Image (cartoon, rainbow, N blue to C red; front, side, top):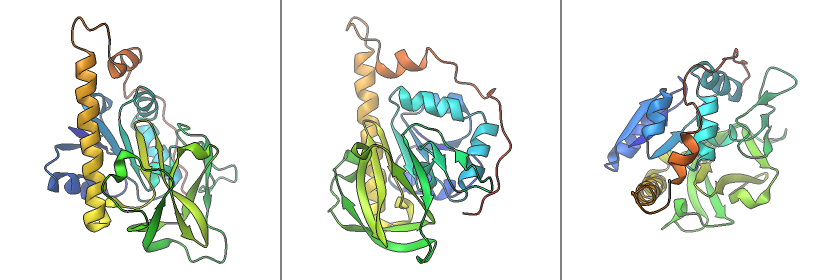
Length: 247
């Protein structure tokens, strides 16, 4: 089962339905225990960065997400789900900006003046690396975008793809079992479905590997079990009020 994180924003059901079209079991949930039970986590997003982080905080999901990602649980971020991986975004009504999950070093910035925002429509994705997410997909393929902000990673080694809009911006990142794309696979027709299918297949393979490592007598405790069991995954984390920035 894959878990689509429910933080009361965005295109959650459309992403879940896209997975269901592929025959993939999926659950839309805000329960950290259901995230723990899932083979992979999907965080879609349409809306404002501050609202997203505020809702994740209110549902007690910030710390569980950080810990599950750190433990190696496969993660797919879509659009805003890519941006919140970073440390900070200037998309906020607060002049100081808004803190993100901080899983990846870097910031999120608005497209410069002179460009039409949001960047909306089909655009090419140019691979800088080829993660399993892009298996069977040709370089420079077209995907559908809707966004006004873009990520600026501090570490170029996490960049998996770039797209040109006035200048080149990062349209996909990849680090081990963490994947995130700025475009919308659920709106990108057959190639978008292939991205989701690749992620689902990766999650099944990762889960099978973990189960194998957890078999009695093999000398391994399993990456997910060992890391996650040392932490509390609950909804009792403190919450902060959401900012109300404009996306």
